[in-house]
Length: 302
Image 1 (cartoon, rainbow, N blue to C red):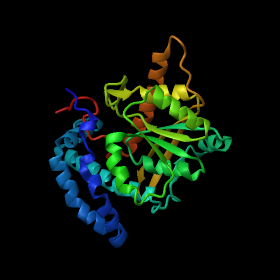
Image 2 (image 1 turned 180 degrees about the vertical axis):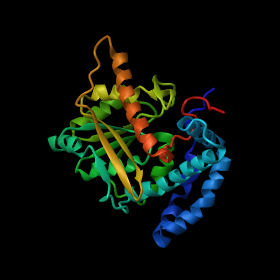
Image 3 (image 1 turned 180 degrees about the horizontal axis):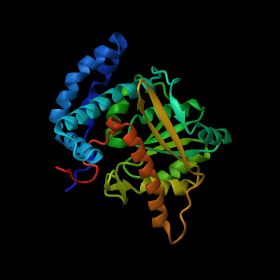
Image 4 (image 1 turned 60 degrees about the vertical axis):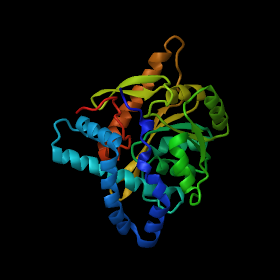
């Protein structure tokens, strides 16, 4: 039976978030990374679900990969995740300079911003979505983000003392009618609404099967149904590190996602297909920054 992503509690790393920030603030990035190295090694050893998910991912990404390259890929993936925790905190507390960020799709995004419309930004757990949220906030627009209650609670509590961001968080376990009603009001007020679409619902909600990285994977239906219900511009949003800076991609997907009566399922599948194709493209551009540490395709390729 497939193991659900909620069984993975992000390794408990968020418990040390205060220490991470203190170490970086007083000693800089290299002492932080020296301390982080053994932490990452231990995390790989004591988290079988995350390790199994990472091994499965690299074998699908690079069929026939050698054991040495597989081990290095898994380590780099855990290492990138550990570093991303620090970057998330620095970005949220406005201690990270985003002026060197490489932004793609700026023109279409700016046109929507200047029009005063609200918009839906569909992201993922690849890279660092906090940088996208921060850049959206810099556009002088209110931002609200849907987050998973159980996983977000510890991190949000840890960063509350540091964050200076005005991003409003809406904690949900699934996208339903009540959520859509709340968000439609936000859109009417000109908010930028952020949601991820690469993890299946917690309590058995509807999913869409889609080819991804050479095999079928399950994606949540909720974000794409929400895109249709909100009747607003939709962007696919991806952000990841390239060298010493972030790259942000705002991909204009729809001025408004319309699902034809009697053909709704096909419309949802097409929207999900576009998203999964974009996601795979960016994942392959920065493979170490794939942060879904569980068997994403349902079972491991041992």
